[in-house]
Length: 381
Image 1 (cartoon, rainbow, N blue to C red):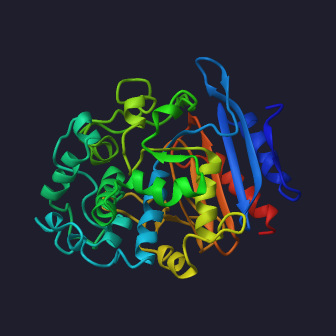
Image 2 (cartoon, rainbow, N blue to C red; image 1 turned 180 degrees about the vertical axis):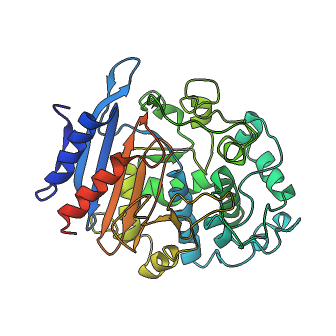
């Protein structure tokens, strides 16, 4: 890539070098990276193509689907409510949502869900796309669900159920669905370009996703992993331009809080910077005590399906995982997306970071990790 747009502060040129090399060494299409340090933006870079079909370029404020980075938005909201004393993460979910506490779910806590330990990574109920968009049918299906294992004895990635379950707890406490509550409590006050449920006015300017050649697919439709990712086939994956695929405005516009966020790099990095330091002298969202609670490891190693990708999980966040998603250290917390997107914060280093892209190479690919390593080098780590 011969050129890109944006700027870096003195001392962060290494991030710009890696950003440029990503375009040369990967099948990058369009991408952006933003870094805050000490509450101040020190890196804001973007380049490439947002829409391969039209050739429309990536702009400073371009948003793109970021998949499970959505879990970071939901989890920040949950921790804010806990910090305010409105949510006890270790109390049964049924304290806030009485209908949930049936069929073996009576002792499940929000913490277990945030740590992917609740035993409900997928639903038995088969729902249509319209029912998922309507919210209430998913909530009823969760109420009727029995855990696949005794809660808190094992873990497995809770995919979409994570967002609906914690999202309904948020709704019971606040009266707002999680996407609406995020905008009201965090997104709008801070002016963040990040949504769970993209507004119609933002649709035309979004980046469109494309699949990288050779990207690994999912196992068959009956495999638990495929059922987790597609909600039993109601959501198309990895299909993008098909109805109910990830370029479909109908999907992007609905609240899909486990994996349906759309954001810019600055929107995601700003969220984590606000969480760990505050932005431009503003109050930090999460206290040091709240961050300490969030980064306490709950799950790692082999999950219920027998896989160990090297991920470590705290309460709602991916933690520093050297063999999967290396970050900056033990105070780092974030979430990544199926297309390679990644965002995290760290209050020891005072950093908020986000990388977003529209070419989907593979879950956990190296583009973001190279940028994080560059940030670490710029910080002297």
